[in-house]
Amino acid sequence: MKTSGFFFFVLFLIQGWHSSFETNNPIHFSFPPQSTQTDRMAPLRFVLFLLFSLSASSTLLFPLQPTTTSHPPLHLLRVSSNRSTTRFHHHHHHRPLPLSPGSDYTLPLSVGQPPLTQTIPVYLDTASDLVWLPCSPFECILCENKPPSLSHFDPKHSPSLPVPCDSPACSAAHSRTPSRDLCAAAGCSLDDLETCSCSQHCPTFYYAYADGSLLASLLSDRLPLSPHHSFVFGCARSTLAEPIGVAGLGQGPLSLPAQLPPSPSRSFSYCLPVQHAVGNAQGAGRPGPLILGRSPPVQGFAYTPMLHNPRRPYFYYVGLDAVHVGQRRIAAPPELRRLDRKGGGGLVVDSGSTFTVLPPGFRRKIVSEFERGVGFERAKWVEDETGMGPCYYMRTATKDVEERSRFNKIGALWIPKVGFQFKGNVTLDLPTDNYFMRFDVRGRERVGCLLLLGGSQEERGGPAGILGNYQQQNFEVVYDTEGKRLGFAPRQCTDLWDDLHA
Image (cartoon, rainbow, N blue to C red; front, top):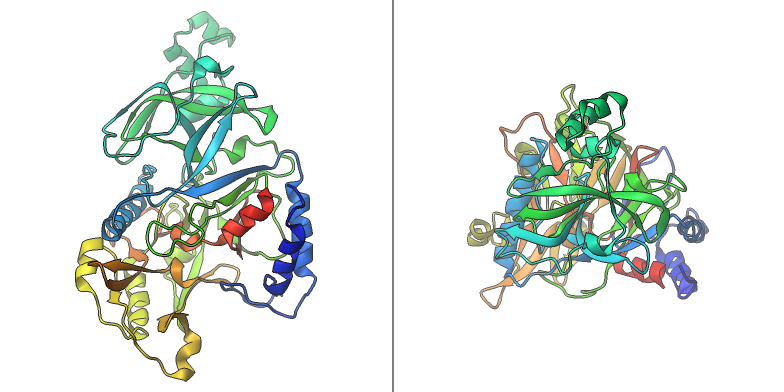
């Protein structure tokens, strides 16, 4: 990281990016961040800490770019709402769901040492624990209507080596199948199996999604920015409805963070820039940062504990205590606050799901309170077209002056404030664009929709809810895997990338 722009960054933080962190008081984060007089040196300490933590050689910085689409807003909302709820349902069955354009984030993943480095765009997914790349020659079945990968990994032009059948990575790729079974399937003799001297490669593995799948071999190489540590990934030559690879950041041994060196940290953070497929295009085209090896900061962040789930150890769970609408606190049901003995419940933090999904009864209470504060006419036909709701015609509505502290202002319009309260008395006051999307329909009519979805009443045994990427926009989210906690801090993600990458 260069020092260009550093003093402007410090001045920016001093002017508005500091918060009070008294351990016995509730912590509220709003956007834009609100200044306090508690600790005037906190912003400077935070910047110095950030520079120090990013100076370590094993810290990797990647640009995160929202995928683009030419679909109209109504179609995009329909697709995004459908796949958010479908992904939620399939989380109950231990299966991740393939990601789709227009709602997710990609990063360029470079594999191999110069001059043989190859860079492949992949999706970011915290609910997956596998890294895989499309490999040449590559065949994707039923991919006619999906955007193709811009490049494929070519093992012939790489020193990548096949992973042996008796390695822990091979067992992990095959759902923890014992190594001897894998080596027997790979063609090892009985004598080699008994003497643990088999030299066969890890067999091809099958990885299934809800509406797609892939066959891949397991390869080992090195990342250019971490040349002294091996990196294992799936090399897929044949997929079903999966044209683009995935960088899994979940809690598994084959995930990207798990394969980093332990110093300074296997923790990581990302800051998701605003998606611009619908609405305001300000900042479009500029990325936000993914920081691997991120030493968990102290200043500027509020932390909520992760919930450990031995039944689904690859997910990142947190407890949601309440949702604030206006000035009313709506308590979350018990299944969102904790995990039960069978591993059900909790809120999964998922970068691959677009919108937040909550239990239907809880969501109805939130919608009812939101409705009380909105003076707009319902756009029922938009709700039918998109699967979102409630949706409104964005025409002028007035609120009493004494009530306006409960609202966010959009031009001349007022929208009830929404915030998530997590375990540890940490409340994130969401920017309006994170929970209320506005767009034009029929060429001239402006409408807006609440971006919180309801799950199925019949679902049991899996996550009670999902925190989607749309609600995480313009927050830096730190996954402190050693401290078993998740941290949040409000940011302008594109500006943060510019400062870190300057």
